[in-house]
Length: 554
Image 1 (cartoon, rainbow, N blue to C red):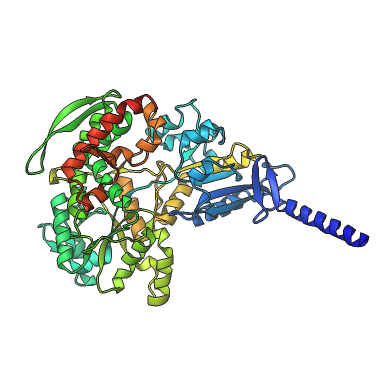
Image 2 (tube, rainbow, N blue to C red; image 1 turned 45 degrees about the vertical axis):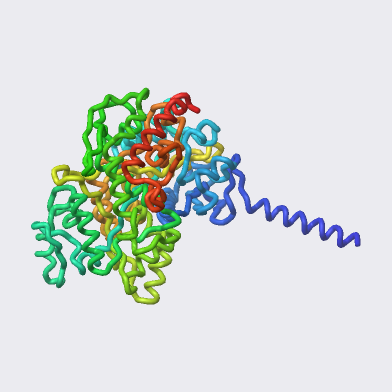
């Protein structure tokens, strides 16, 4: 009995030592044994394993490790570096991280309320990273120079310091099937008629005969696509006439439809007009009257923080609601019934429709959809022998209300995605160096090509990287390069104090009709609870009532 007791004690001690060896403390951070290398300087990096995935981070970590394989300055007695990547879709959301202890050194995630983290003193000051030189990586500028002005003012509003960097762009809209458009003749020619590619040998003439798209220029990414809203509606009728279904979408995530139509607001109002929704400083053309034919009469109004609710009368908001009601308010363009698809099911239905009796022409989604749909692409490669890279999809630019409005897209990015370092990371020098590395033009270019998603900073995608992107990724790179992008941030205190309103959907969708509150135009139109004009007037009624509370920070 005595010997058994000693043996049990020794076993317990060994288990404890083994358990201790599985976790290496780094202040309050923890590096798990998986991937930890005791001979090197280590940091752990967590990422939200959603639409951007994690492969981009593992590949970047590998390149960083190779660059610093002989480094001895990050930690005494250690040669080289080790970046341990940890991915999770549930735990590493901004919402979960805001209420739990940070156990990793660095994070890339979405759904972040920036000032919740900053005010809780959870994240490191990275001002030196943002303002410092990138000469080590062959660049002459700084990360700060790559930031949009709205990010600069927002991120430094508290104390003139930076604590996070923006992660990726979140664009919503309509994905279209390029092969289907060519086969069935869903492109426009220069005479305004529909154009099909009958034989690959005619490719050169086919491309030359495409009409200018919404940007008004020929030889760009949007040639042959509907330039005006009328052309867009005519296209939907043409798609239906060919026994195809214009749109596939997620019924259980129908907010994607709302957000796609919100993209129409941004493009209609343009950069300056749409940005007023976050600066509340400038002149706006607002709807004074909606005529019987659906057109509007506008008036110029000076916008200030005192009357910011007047922006709910922006014409783009009315036209976006009208578009949503006409397209998604009936079953005409969505397959004859209202579906209850999860977004992953909608993606799968869309991709697989190529082999089904009825084909979907477009998918209502965010730009990350291809990454989320990888299981479906893998399945089809096994069943049909068709690789993901052989499928061609594009991102549909929003049509202009009128042809004379042709020009580059104005796009809106809103997912509150950020990158930051845990304040309690012990190897801060290594963490900051990796943060610098990831924000070089070269690394952001590789990220863009790998994920088909742009980073929310200014940089160029290299041709050699673009060549590795999917067709969808290439079209998005071209669109993003030409576009003006609005982010839902500013130094206005009201905007900072109410991210739940301005960085999300409430500002564009909360409406009050006959004393009843609505938050989802899709449901309202589907259930015949209102029409576009009623919902539009309700936007103004709702925000005018709420404005004093917003201004007072309630």
